[in-house]
Amino acid sequence: MSPAQSGTRENADSCTMVVFGASGDLTKRKLIPALYNLSVEQRLPAGFSLLGYGRSEISDEEFRRKMREAVKEFSRPRVENEPAWGSFAHGLYYLAGDYEESKGYLRLKEFLAKIDRERSNRGNRIFYLATPPDLYAPVIQRISAAGLAGKGARDAGWTRIVIEKPFGSDLESARALNRELHEVFDEEQVYRIDHYLGKETVQNILVFRFGNAVFEPIWNRRYVDHVQITAAESVGVEGRGGYYEKAGATRDMFQNHLLQLLCLTAMEPPISFAGDAVRDEKVKVLRSVRSIASQELAQVAVRGQYGQGLLGGQKVRAYREEPGVAPDSTTETYAAVKFFIDNWRWEGVPFYLRSGKRLPERVTEIAIQFRRPPLLLFNACPVEPVSPNVLRLRIQPDEGIALTFEVKSPGPDICVSSLSLDFNYQAAFGLSPPDAYETLLIDCIRGDSTLFTRHDWVELAWSLITPLLRGWESTLPNFSNYEAGTWGPEEADALIESDGRRWRRP
Ligand code: BG6
Image (cartoon, rainbow, N blue to C red):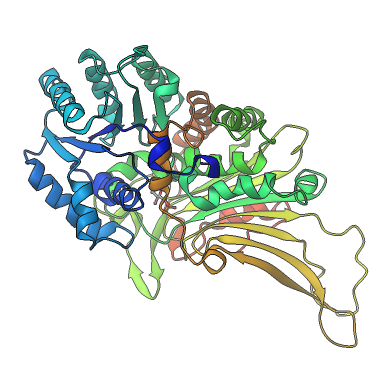
Protein backbone atom coordinates (compact mmCIF):
# COMPACT_ATOMS: atom_id res chain seq x y z
CA MET A 1 0.00 0.00 0.00
CA SER A 2 2.89 2.44 0.47
CA PRO A 3 4.36 4.24 -2.52
CA ALA A 4 7.49 2.15 -2.13
CA GLN A 5 5.37 -0.92 -2.72
CA SER A 6 3.33 0.63 -5.51
CA GLY A 7 2.53 -1.92 -8.11
CA THR A 8 4.95 -2.84 -10.78
CA ARG A 9 5.36 -6.22 -12.36
CA GLU A 10 8.81 -6.54 -10.87
CA ASN A 11 7.91 -6.79 -7.22
CA ALA A 12 5.19 -9.44 -7.37
CA ASP A 13 5.57 -13.16 -8.10
CA SER A 14 3.50 -14.61 -10.86
CA CYS A 15 0.59 -16.65 -9.53
CA THR A 16 -2.77 -18.25 -10.23
CA MET A 17 -5.88 -17.07 -8.43
CA VAL A 18 -8.60 -19.68 -8.00
CA VAL A 19 -11.99 -18.05 -7.49
CA PHE A 20 -14.56 -20.31 -5.82
CA GLY A 21 -17.99 -18.95 -6.68
CA ALA A 22 -16.89 -17.82 -10.12
CA SER A 23 -20.40 -17.61 -11.52
CA GLY A 24 -21.53 -15.32 -8.70
CA ASP A 25 -22.11 -11.60 -8.57
CA LEU A 26 -18.91 -10.64 -6.78
CA THR A 27 -16.73 -12.18 -9.49
CA LYS A 28 -18.37 -10.29 -12.30
CA ARG A 29 -19.06 -7.00 -10.52
CA LYS A 30 -15.83 -6.58 -8.59
CA LEU A 31 -13.06 -9.14 -9.04
CA ILE A 32 -12.80 -9.37 -12.81
CA PRO A 33 -13.17 -5.60 -13.46
CA ALA A 34 -10.54 -4.87 -10.78
CA LEU A 35 -8.09 -7.45 -12.16
CA TYR A 36 -8.68 -6.26 -15.68
CA ASN A 37 -7.86 -2.67 -14.72
CA LEU A 38 -4.72 -3.84 -12.93
CA SER A 39 -3.77 -5.72 -16.07
CA VAL A 40 -4.32 -2.66 -18.29
CA GLU A 41 -2.13 -0.63 -15.94
CA GLN A 42 0.49 -3.38 -16.20
CA ARG A 43 0.45 -3.94 -12.48
CA LEU A 44 -0.25 -7.67 -12.55
CA PRO A 45 2.75 -9.98 -12.63
CA ALA A 46 3.43 -11.50 -16.06
CA GLY A 47 1.76 -14.89 -16.28
CA PHE A 48 -0.94 -13.97 -13.75
CA SER A 49 -3.86 -16.37 -14.31
CA LEU A 50 -7.34 -16.73 -12.93
CA LEU A 51 -9.13 -20.03 -12.68
CA GLY A 52 -12.85 -19.70 -12.05
CA TYR A 53 -14.39 -22.62 -10.16
CA GLY A 54 -18.15 -22.99 -10.01
CA ARG A 55 -21.06 -25.34 -10.45
CA SER A 56 -22.17 -24.15 -13.90
CA GLU A 57 -20.92 -26.33 -16.72
CA ILE A 58 -19.28 -23.81 -19.03
CA SER A 59 -16.13 -23.84 -21.15
CA ASP A 60 -13.09 -21.55 -20.85
CA GLU A 61 -14.34 -19.70 -23.92
CA GLU A 62 -17.81 -19.20 -22.49
CA PHE A 63 -16.31 -17.97 -19.20
CA ARG A 64 -14.10 -15.49 -21.05
CA ARG A 65 -17.10 -14.23 -23.01
CA LYS A 66 -19.14 -13.72 -19.83
CA MET A 67 -16.27 -11.96 -18.10
CA ARG A 68 -15.85 -9.67 -21.05
CA GLU A 69 -19.49 -8.67 -20.73
CA ALA A 70 -18.91 -8.10 -17.01
CA VAL A 71 -15.95 -5.83 -17.70
CA LYS A 72 -18.01 -3.83 -20.18
CA GLU A 73 -20.75 -3.39 -17.67
CA PHE A 74 -18.91 -2.85 -14.40
CA SER A 75 -15.36 -1.72 -15.09
CA ARG A 76 -13.90 1.77 -14.98
CA PRO A 77 -13.03 2.91 -18.59
CA ARG A 78 -10.62 1.14 -20.92
CA VAL A 79 -12.96 -1.72 -21.76
CA GLU A 80 -12.89 -1.38 -25.47
CA ASN A 81 -9.21 -1.95 -25.75
CA GLU A 82 -8.99 -5.22 -27.74
CA PRO A 83 -5.29 -6.10 -27.33
CA ALA A 84 -5.51 -5.37 -23.58
CA TRP A 85 -8.54 -7.59 -23.21
CA GLY A 86 -6.93 -10.32 -25.33
CA SER A 87 -3.84 -10.48 -23.20
CA PHE A 88 -5.86 -10.52 -19.95
CA ALA A 89 -8.37 -13.08 -21.27
CA HIS A 90 -5.53 -15.39 -22.27
CA GLY A 91 -4.95 -16.06 -18.57
CA LEU A 92 -8.61 -16.81 -17.74
CA TYR A 93 -9.67 -20.43 -17.26
CA TYR A 94 -12.72 -22.17 -15.90
CA LEU A 95 -13.35 -25.47 -14.17
CA ALA A 96 -16.79 -26.81 -13.30
CA GLY A 97 -17.01 -28.73 -10.05
CA ASP A 98 -18.90 -29.30 -6.86
CA TYR A 99 -17.79 -27.49 -3.69
CA GLU A 100 -18.24 -30.44 -1.39
CA GLU A 101 -16.94 -33.36 -3.43
CA SER A 102 -13.25 -34.21 -3.37
CA LYS A 103 -13.22 -35.27 -7.03
CA GLY A 104 -13.51 -31.67 -8.18
CA TYR A 105 -10.48 -30.68 -6.10
CA LEU A 106 -8.34 -33.42 -7.60
CA ARG A 107 -9.20 -32.11 -11.05
CA LEU A 108 -8.45 -28.63 -9.76
CA LYS A 109 -5.01 -29.79 -8.67
CA GLU A 110 -4.28 -31.17 -12.13
CA PHE A 111 -5.62 -28.04 -13.78
CA LEU A 112 -3.38 -25.85 -11.62
CA ALA A 113 -0.34 -27.91 -12.55
CA LYS A 114 -1.23 -27.44 -16.22
CA ILE A 115 -1.54 -23.64 -15.77
CA ASP A 116 1.77 -23.60 -13.92
CA ARG A 117 3.41 -25.26 -16.93
CA GLU A 118 1.71 -23.06 -19.50
CA ARG A 119 2.21 -19.78 -17.67
CA SER A 120 5.34 -20.47 -15.58
CA ASN A 121 3.55 -19.72 -12.32
CA ARG A 122 5.82 -21.86 -10.17
CA GLY A 123 3.08 -23.11 -7.87
CA ASN A 124 2.10 -19.73 -6.39
CA ARG A 125 -1.61 -19.74 -5.58
CA ILE A 126 -4.34 -17.57 -4.18
CA PHE A 127 -7.62 -19.26 -3.28
CA TYR A 128 -10.44 -16.73 -3.21
CA LEU A 129 -13.63 -17.72 -1.38
CA ALA A 130 -16.43 -15.84 -3.08
CA THR A 131 -19.04 -18.47 -2.24
CA PRO A 132 -21.93 -18.21 0.21
CA PRO A 133 -20.43 -18.33 3.74
CA ASP A 134 -21.82 -21.77 4.61
CA LEU A 135 -19.39 -23.17 2.03
CA TYR A 136 -16.26 -21.58 3.53
CA ALA A 137 -15.49 -24.46 5.90
CA PRO A 138 -16.20 -27.29 3.40
CA VAL A 139 -14.05 -25.62 0.73
CA ILE A 140 -11.18 -25.02 3.17
CA GLN A 141 -11.26 -28.69 4.22
CA ARG A 142 -11.33 -29.94 0.62
CA ILE A 143 -8.42 -27.68 -0.37
CA SER A 144 -6.45 -29.21 2.46
CA ALA A 145 -7.47 -32.79 1.68
CA ALA A 146 -6.33 -32.33 -1.93
CA GLY A 147 -2.91 -31.25 -0.63
CA LEU A 148 -3.33 -27.73 -1.97
CA ALA A 149 -3.04 -25.66 1.22
CA GLY A 150 0.71 -25.36 1.15
CA LYS A 151 0.95 -24.85 4.95
CA GLY A 152 4.54 -25.19 6.00
CA ALA A 153 5.66 -26.17 2.46
CA ARG A 154 8.50 -23.79 1.77
CA ASP A 155 9.73 -25.11 -1.57
CA ALA A 156 6.50 -25.41 -3.57
CA GLY A 157 5.63 -21.76 -4.12
CA TRP A 158 3.39 -19.79 -1.80
CA THR A 159 -0.33 -20.27 -1.10
CA ARG A 160 -2.74 -17.60 0.20
CA ILE A 161 -6.45 -17.66 0.92
CA VAL A 162 -8.81 -14.69 0.67
CA ILE A 163 -12.10 -14.77 2.55
CA GLU A 164 -15.00 -12.45 1.90
CA LYS A 165 -17.34 -11.14 4.53
CA PRO A 166 -19.38 -12.11 6.47
CA PHE A 167 -16.67 -13.70 8.60
CA GLY A 168 -19.01 -15.52 10.99
CA SER A 169 -22.32 -14.26 12.29
CA ASP A 170 -21.36 -13.88 15.96
CA LEU A 171 -18.36 -14.41 18.22
CA GLU A 172 -18.81 -18.16 18.42
CA SER A 173 -19.05 -18.75 14.67
CA ALA A 174 -16.15 -16.38 13.93
CA ARG A 175 -13.97 -18.31 16.39
CA ALA A 176 -15.02 -21.58 14.79
CA LEU A 177 -14.14 -20.29 11.33
CA ASN A 178 -10.76 -19.05 12.56
CA ARG A 179 -10.11 -22.53 13.98
CA GLU A 180 -11.06 -24.21 10.69
CA LEU A 181 -8.72 -21.88 8.86
CA HIS A 182 -5.81 -22.29 11.21
CA GLU A 183 -6.00 -26.08 11.01
CA VAL A 184 -5.19 -25.72 7.34
CA PHE A 185 -3.41 -22.37 6.87
CA ASP A 186 -0.95 -20.28 8.86
CA GLU A 187 -2.34 -16.86 9.79
CA GLU A 188 0.10 -15.18 7.41
CA GLN A 189 -1.52 -17.06 4.53
CA VAL A 190 -4.99 -15.71 5.39
CA TYR A 191 -6.39 -12.49 3.88
CA ARG A 192 -9.81 -11.51 5.35
CA ILE A 193 -11.32 -8.84 3.12
CA ASP A 194 -13.04 -5.70 4.30
CA HIS A 195 -13.48 -3.65 1.15
CA TYR A 196 -13.63 -0.41 3.18
CA LEU A 197 -9.93 -0.78 3.91
CA GLY A 198 -9.20 -0.72 0.20
CA LYS A 199 -10.88 2.64 -0.28
CA GLU A 200 -8.36 5.36 -1.04
CA THR A 201 -9.95 7.80 1.41
CA VAL A 202 -9.91 5.24 4.20
CA GLN A 203 -6.18 4.73 3.73
CA ASN A 204 -5.83 8.48 3.62
CA ILE A 205 -6.99 8.66 7.25
CA LEU A 206 -3.62 7.27 8.27
CA VAL A 207 -1.65 9.51 5.92
CA PHE A 208 -3.60 12.55 7.09
CA ARG A 209 -3.10 11.70 10.75
CA PHE A 210 0.51 10.59 10.67
CA GLY A 211 1.82 12.60 7.73
CA ASN A 212 0.89 15.98 9.21
CA ALA A 213 2.22 17.34 12.43
CA VAL A 214 -0.52 19.91 13.07
CA PHE A 215 -3.42 17.62 13.88
CA GLU A 216 -1.82 14.97 16.03
CA PRO A 217 -1.37 17.18 19.13
CA ILE A 218 -5.10 17.97 19.19
CA TRP A 219 -6.29 14.48 18.33
CA ASN A 220 -7.38 13.55 21.84
CA ARG A 221 -9.83 14.07 24.69
CA ARG A 222 -8.44 17.53 25.55
CA TYR A 223 -9.53 19.01 22.21
CA VAL A 224 -12.06 16.61 20.72
CA ASP A 225 -15.62 16.85 21.97
CA HIS A 226 -16.92 13.80 20.14
CA VAL A 227 -16.66 11.83 16.91
CA GLN A 228 -19.49 10.88 14.54
CA ILE A 229 -19.06 8.10 12.00
CA THR A 230 -21.84 7.84 9.44
CA ALA A 231 -22.36 5.32 6.66
CA ALA A 232 -25.66 6.27 5.10
CA GLU A 233 -27.09 4.53 2.07
CA SER A 234 -30.06 5.54 -0.01
CA VAL A 235 -30.40 2.08 -1.54
CA GLY A 236 -32.53 -0.63 0.02
CA VAL A 237 -31.47 -4.27 0.12
CA GLU A 238 -31.09 -4.47 -3.68
CA GLY A 239 -32.47 -7.97 -4.16
CA ARG A 240 -30.33 -9.35 -1.32
CA GLY A 241 -33.27 -9.78 1.07
CA GLY A 242 -32.37 -13.39 1.84
CA TYR A 243 -28.86 -12.49 2.97
CA TYR A 244 -29.86 -9.27 4.71
CA GLU A 245 -32.60 -10.91 6.77
CA LYS A 246 -29.88 -12.89 8.57
CA ALA A 247 -27.43 -10.00 8.73
CA GLY A 248 -29.12 -6.66 9.43
CA ALA A 249 -27.29 -3.36 9.63
CA THR A 250 -25.23 -4.31 12.68
CA ARG A 251 -23.64 -7.42 11.18
CA ASP A 252 -23.56 -6.00 7.66
CA MET A 253 -21.91 -2.64 8.41
CA PHE A 254 -20.90 -2.24 12.08
CA GLN A 255 -18.94 -5.38 12.88
CA ASN A 256 -16.62 -4.71 9.95
CA HIS A 257 -16.66 -1.37 8.10
CA LEU A 258 -17.69 1.01 10.89
CA LEU A 259 -15.44 -0.52 13.53
CA GLN A 260 -12.55 -0.36 11.06
CA LEU A 261 -13.19 3.36 10.59
CA LEU A 262 -13.35 3.82 14.35
CA CYS A 263 -10.02 2.03 14.76
CA LEU A 264 -8.25 4.10 12.10
CA THR A 265 -9.57 7.29 13.67
CA ALA A 266 -8.69 6.35 17.22
CA MET A 267 -5.49 4.28 16.96
CA GLU A 268 -2.07 5.31 18.25
CA PRO A 269 0.73 5.91 15.73
CA PRO A 270 2.08 2.52 14.65
CA ILE A 271 5.83 1.90 14.84
CA SER A 272 5.86 1.48 11.05
CA PHE A 273 3.45 1.17 8.15
CA ALA A 274 4.01 -2.57 7.92
CA GLY A 275 1.18 -5.11 8.19
CA ASP A 276 1.35 -6.20 11.79
CA ALA A 277 2.44 -2.85 13.19
CA VAL A 278 -0.74 -1.21 11.91
CA ARG A 279 -2.89 -4.17 12.81
CA ASP A 280 -1.49 -4.32 16.35
CA GLU A 281 -2.62 -0.74 16.96
CA LYS A 282 -6.11 -1.42 15.62
CA VAL A 283 -6.44 -4.41 17.91
CA LYS A 284 -5.41 -2.23 20.86
CA VAL A 285 -8.27 0.16 20.09
CA LEU A 286 -10.85 -2.63 20.12
CA ARG A 287 -9.42 -3.93 23.37
CA SER A 288 -10.09 -0.51 24.91
CA VAL A 289 -13.63 -0.11 23.60
CA ARG A 290 -15.99 -0.36 26.56
CA SER A 291 -18.32 -3.33 26.16
CA ILE A 292 -22.02 -2.69 26.27
CA ALA A 293 -23.83 -4.15 29.26
CA SER A 294 -27.36 -5.45 28.65
CA GLN A 295 -28.95 -3.08 31.19
CA GLU A 296 -27.59 0.01 29.37
CA LEU A 297 -28.41 -1.18 25.86
CA ALA A 298 -31.38 1.17 25.43
CA GLN A 299 -29.27 4.20 26.41
CA VAL A 300 -26.41 3.52 24.02
CA ALA A 301 -27.90 1.74 21.01
CA VAL A 302 -30.89 2.22 18.75
CA ARG A 303 -32.17 0.03 15.94
CA GLY A 304 -34.62 0.84 13.18
CA GLN A 305 -36.33 -0.57 10.13
CA TYR A 306 -37.63 1.47 7.23
CA GLY A 307 -41.23 1.62 6.19
CA GLN A 308 -42.54 2.98 2.90
CA GLY A 309 -41.47 6.46 1.95
CA LEU A 310 -40.24 8.81 -0.73
CA LEU A 311 -36.73 8.86 -2.14
CA GLY A 312 -35.79 11.27 -4.90
CA GLY A 313 -39.50 11.90 -5.40
CA GLN A 314 -40.20 8.19 -5.98
CA LYS A 315 -42.32 6.09 -3.68
CA VAL A 316 -40.30 3.15 -2.33
CA ARG A 317 -41.57 0.07 -0.55
CA ALA A 318 -41.08 -0.86 3.06
CA TYR A 319 -38.34 -3.30 4.05
CA ARG A 320 -40.98 -5.89 4.95
CA GLU A 321 -42.25 -5.72 1.37
CA GLU A 322 -38.85 -6.43 -0.20
CA PRO A 323 -38.44 -9.83 -1.95
CA GLY A 324 -37.01 -12.47 0.37
CA VAL A 325 -38.00 -10.54 3.52
CA ALA A 326 -40.51 -11.84 6.09
CA PRO A 327 -43.68 -9.72 6.38
CA ASP A 328 -43.08 -9.50 10.15
CA SER A 329 -39.27 -9.23 9.92
CA THR A 330 -37.44 -7.92 13.00
CA THR A 331 -34.19 -7.32 11.09
CA GLU A 332 -32.76 -3.84 11.62
CA THR A 333 -31.96 -1.76 8.55
CA TYR A 334 -30.60 1.07 10.71
CA ALA A 335 -28.47 1.15 13.83
CA ALA A 336 -26.85 3.87 15.91
CA VAL A 337 -24.47 3.08 18.74
CA LYS A 338 -22.47 5.20 21.19
CA PHE A 339 -19.08 3.75 22.04
CA PHE A 340 -16.44 4.87 24.52
CA ILE A 341 -12.77 4.04 24.25
CA ASP A 342 -11.28 3.63 27.69
CA ASN A 343 -7.71 4.73 27.17
CA TRP A 344 -5.68 7.87 27.93
CA ARG A 345 -6.24 9.47 24.56
CA TRP A 346 -10.02 9.07 24.38
CA GLU A 347 -11.34 8.82 27.91
CA GLY A 348 -14.82 10.42 28.05
CA VAL A 349 -15.05 11.16 24.29
CA PRO A 350 -18.15 9.52 22.76
CA PHE A 351 -17.89 7.93 19.34
CA TYR A 352 -21.36 7.93 17.78
CA LEU A 353 -21.66 5.43 14.91
CA ARG A 354 -24.68 5.09 12.65
CA SER A 355 -25.55 3.32 9.45
CA GLY A 356 -28.77 2.68 7.64
CA LYS A 357 -30.44 1.84 4.37
CA ARG A 358 -32.98 4.03 2.60
CA LEU A 359 -31.65 7.20 4.18
CA PRO A 360 -31.94 10.40 2.11
CA GLU A 361 -28.49 10.12 0.53
CA ARG A 362 -25.41 7.97 0.16
CA VAL A 363 -22.64 9.37 2.27
CA THR A 364 -19.88 7.94 4.43
CA GLU A 365 -17.93 10.31 6.61
CA ILE A 366 -16.06 10.69 9.85
CA ALA A 367 -16.69 13.98 11.61
CA ILE A 368 -14.39 15.02 14.42
CA GLN A 369 -15.99 17.78 16.40
CA PHE A 370 -13.63 19.85 18.50
CA ARG A 371 -14.48 21.58 21.75
CA ARG A 372 -15.83 25.10 21.72
CA PRO A 373 -13.49 27.99 22.61
CA PRO A 374 -13.32 28.37 26.38
CA LEU A 375 -14.74 31.90 26.43
CA LEU A 376 -17.16 33.30 23.88
CA LEU A 377 -16.16 36.89 23.19
CA PHE A 378 -18.28 37.68 20.15
CA ASN A 379 -21.91 38.21 20.90
CA ALA A 380 -22.66 41.43 19.08
CA CYS A 381 -24.96 39.63 16.68
CA PRO A 382 -27.80 37.91 18.44
CA VAL A 383 -27.56 34.74 16.43
CA GLU A 384 -26.22 31.26 17.04
CA PRO A 385 -23.26 30.94 19.38
CA VAL A 386 -19.87 30.29 17.80
CA SER A 387 -19.91 26.86 16.16
CA PRO A 388 -17.27 24.33 17.13
CA ASN A 389 -14.62 23.41 14.55
CA VAL A 390 -15.40 20.21 12.72
CA LEU A 391 -13.00 18.16 10.65
CA ARG A 392 -14.80 15.98 8.15
CA LEU A 393 -13.08 13.09 6.47
CA ARG A 394 -15.35 12.35 3.54
CA ILE A 395 -14.99 8.71 2.52
CA GLN A 396 -17.59 8.82 -0.27
CA PRO A 397 -18.92 10.31 -2.48
CA ASP A 398 -17.06 13.61 -3.18
CA GLU A 399 -14.03 12.10 -1.47
CA GLY A 400 -12.10 14.69 0.43
CA ILE A 401 -11.45 16.51 3.70
CA ALA A 402 -13.07 19.66 5.06
CA LEU A 403 -12.35 21.76 8.14
CA THR A 404 -14.93 24.26 9.30
CA PHE A 405 -13.81 27.33 11.18
CA GLU A 406 -15.20 30.67 12.26
CA VAL A 407 -14.57 33.99 10.51
CA LYS A 408 -15.79 37.52 10.94
CA SER A 409 -18.63 38.37 8.57
CA PRO A 410 -18.06 41.65 6.71
CA GLY A 411 -19.73 44.62 8.40
CA PRO A 412 -19.42 47.05 11.26
CA ASP A 413 -20.31 44.58 14.01
CA ILE A 414 -18.33 41.59 15.13
CA CYS A 415 -20.47 38.85 13.73
CA VAL A 416 -19.18 35.36 13.19
CA SER A 417 -19.94 32.88 10.45
CA SER A 418 -18.70 29.36 9.71
CA LEU A 419 -16.61 28.67 6.63
CA SER A 420 -14.94 25.57 5.38
CA LEU A 421 -11.48 24.79 4.08
CA ASP A 422 -11.95 22.02 1.53
CA PHE A 423 -9.83 19.48 -0.20
CA ASN A 424 -11.53 17.40 -2.88
CA TYR A 425 -9.81 14.38 -4.38
CA GLN A 426 -11.24 14.74 -7.85
CA ALA A 427 -10.44 18.46 -8.08
CA ALA A 428 -6.95 18.09 -6.60
CA PHE A 429 -5.76 15.04 -8.49
CA GLY A 430 -8.04 15.12 -11.53
CA LEU A 431 -9.07 11.52 -11.16
CA SER A 432 -11.40 9.39 -9.10
CA PRO A 433 -9.81 6.98 -6.67
CA PRO A 434 -9.40 3.38 -7.89
CA ASP A 435 -11.88 0.75 -6.84
CA ALA A 436 -11.13 -0.75 -3.42
CA TYR A 437 -10.79 -4.23 -4.93
CA GLU A 438 -7.92 -3.13 -7.17
CA THR A 439 -5.94 -2.06 -4.12
CA LEU A 440 -6.78 -5.14 -2.10
CA LEU A 441 -6.16 -7.66 -4.87
CA ILE A 442 -2.78 -6.26 -5.80
CA ASP A 443 -1.80 -6.12 -2.11
CA CYS A 444 -2.72 -9.78 -1.72
CA ILE A 445 -0.77 -10.71 -4.86
CA ARG A 446 2.25 -8.89 -3.42
CA GLY A 447 1.80 -10.48 -0.01
CA ASP A 448 1.03 -7.25 1.85
CA SER A 449 -1.62 -7.94 4.50
CA THR A 450 -1.74 -4.46 6.08
CA LEU A 451 -5.22 -3.77 4.72
CA PHE A 452 -6.65 -7.15 5.65
CA THR A 453 -8.33 -8.11 8.90
CA ARG A 454 -6.39 -10.23 11.36
CA HIS A 455 -7.93 -13.11 13.33
CA ASP A 456 -7.76 -11.31 16.70
CA TRP A 457 -9.35 -8.12 15.31
CA VAL A 458 -12.28 -10.02 13.86
CA GLU A 459 -12.94 -11.84 17.14
CA LEU A 460 -12.67 -8.65 19.20
CA ALA A 461 -15.08 -6.90 16.85
CA TRP A 462 -17.57 -9.72 17.28
CA SER A 463 -17.12 -9.65 21.04
CA LEU A 464 -18.30 -6.02 21.01
CA ILE A 465 -21.18 -6.58 18.62
CA THR A 466 -22.51 -9.94 19.85
CA PRO A 467 -23.91 -8.67 23.22
CA LEU A 468 -25.76 -5.98 21.32
CA LEU A 469 -27.31 -8.53 18.98
CA ARG A 470 -28.21 -10.84 21.86
CA GLY A 471 -29.81 -7.97 23.77
CA TRP A 472 -31.89 -7.00 20.78
CA GLU A 473 -32.91 -10.59 20.08
CA SER A 474 -34.44 -10.81 23.54
CA THR A 475 -36.97 -8.02 22.93
CA LEU A 476 -39.46 -7.44 20.15
CA PRO A 477 -38.81 -4.19 18.24
CA ASN A 478 -41.54 -1.80 17.27
CA PHE A 479 -40.89 -1.82 13.48
CA SER A 480 -41.12 -0.07 11.12
CA ASN A 481 -39.98 3.05 12.94
CA TYR A 482 -38.62 5.32 10.20
CA GLU A 483 -39.86 6.25 6.80
CA ALA A 484 -37.69 5.54 3.80
CA GLY A 485 -36.04 8.81 2.76
CA THR A 486 -35.60 10.12 6.31
CA TRP A 487 -32.56 10.11 8.61
CA GLY A 488 -33.62 7.15 10.76
CA PRO A 489 -35.81 6.67 13.82
CA GLU A 490 -36.54 9.44 16.34
CA GLU A 491 -34.90 7.37 19.08
CA ALA A 492 -31.59 7.84 17.25
CA ASP A 493 -31.93 11.61 17.62
CA ALA A 494 -32.77 11.14 21.27
CA LEU A 495 -29.64 8.98 21.73
CA ILE A 496 -27.32 11.85 20.87
CA GLU A 497 -29.51 14.78 21.93
CA SER A 498 -29.72 13.50 25.50
CA ASP A 499 -25.96 14.22 25.59
CA GLY A 500 -26.56 17.80 24.41
CA ARG A 501 -25.29 17.06 20.87
CA ARG A 502 -26.85 16.58 17.45
CA TRP A 503 -26.31 14.37 14.46
CA ARG A 504 -24.64 16.21 11.66
CA ARG A 505 -26.61 16.39 8.44
CA PRO A 506 -23.90 15.50 5.92
C1 BG6 B 1 -21.32 -4.20 1.94
C2 BG6 B 1 -22.69 -4.46 2.50
O1 BG6 B 1 -20.32 -4.80 2.72
O2 BG6 B 1 -21.09 -2.80 1.92
C3 BG6 B 1 -23.76 -3.75 1.71
O3 BG6 B 1 -22.94 -5.86 2.50
C4 BG6 B 1 -23.43 -2.29 1.61
O4 BG6 B 1 -25.04 -3.94 2.30
C5 BG6 B 1 -22.01 -2.08 1.12
O5 BG6 B 1 -24.36 -1.70 0.70
C6 BG6 B 1 -21.62 -0.63 1.18
O6 BG6 B 1 -20.40 -0.49 0.53
P1 BG6 B 1 -20.01 0.88 -0.18
O7 BG6 B 1 -18.65 0.63 -0.69
O8 BG6 B 1 -21.05 1.11 -1.24
O9 BG6 B 1 -20.09 1.90 0.90
